[in-house]
Amino acid sequence: MATLNIEILNPKAKKLLQDLAELRLISISEKTSNPFFDVIKKLRSKKSNISLDEITKDVEAVRTKRYGK
Image 1 (cartoon, rainbow, N blue to C red):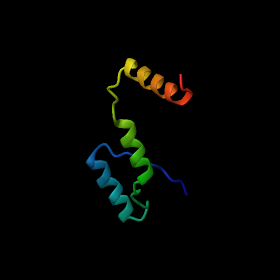
Image 2: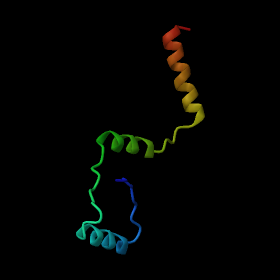
Image 3: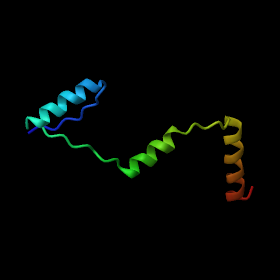
C-alpha cells in the first residue's frame, strides 16, 4: 500500500476522489494540523521592519551590558 499527499486544486478532483473512496478503491483521511508547526508558520510569516542600524544598536547595548565596557 502506498501513501500519497495530494493537494486538491479543483473541487471536481475532490469529488472524483470521494467517488473512488465510495467504491472502496482508496481510503481518504484528513491530516490534522500539528500545533507546533502552526506556531512555527505563524512566527515565520511575520515580517520584521527593523533596520540594520537598530539591530546594531541593540547588539552593542547587549555587549556593553554583558562585558561592562
